[in-house]
Length: 248
Image 1 (cartoon, helix red, strand yellow):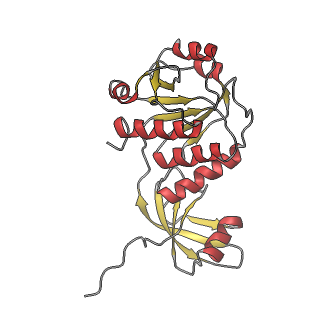
Image 2 (cartoon, rainbow, N blue to C red; image 1 turned 90 degrees about the horizontal axis):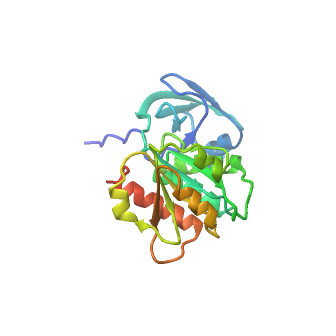
Image 3 (tube, rainbow, N blue to C red; image 1 turned 45 degrees about the horizontal axis):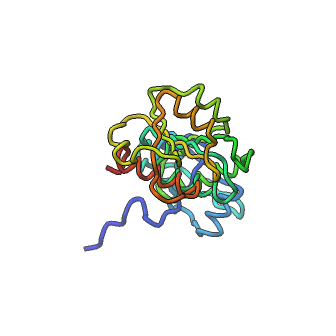
């Protein structure tokens, strides 16, 4: 007896698009995405490509009208519903290119709902290329099976972030001078949350005092060793997902 082929094909390439998807929707593809599908993945007529737009879930689309530099994809069926991730934000100080890119990539893979860059006094970087970070979020989402991208916000100063903070959202922050044990603290603080990670030099004393004075702020320890900023961001996110997120 012949086995029924997997649907959608497990080898189907996956692509983020801006067009809102739905049954019968036709999506023109050109530029780098078209080069990837045609020249790298060798997509042929009627092959399946998986599409997601961040709003409509994931859709299987058939390739048609393939030319040298562009093609058309037609949605035929929904393969995943719209994604619902835990209400968790990662707020992190800007760090050097490559390391901040890693944070963006892993934040997406781990299921972060919002990535919020925060400018602090000891940050050695004061500008970010949000287009580049968005590209890393797209690539990570295509790889890890997400159907929605994390919201990527403009960088804000720490004092502005704290001033507008809602006490209904826990603000965990990595306090290298001493904080509560992470696991026990996360277990006693469920609900909407954010984790604030400082730059490589940490928060200065005035910033630390301002954070502690913010309603909803919860200082925690990330262990006995000094962690790089990107390590702290990834570790804190994974811990929260394990205890209060969608890993449990």
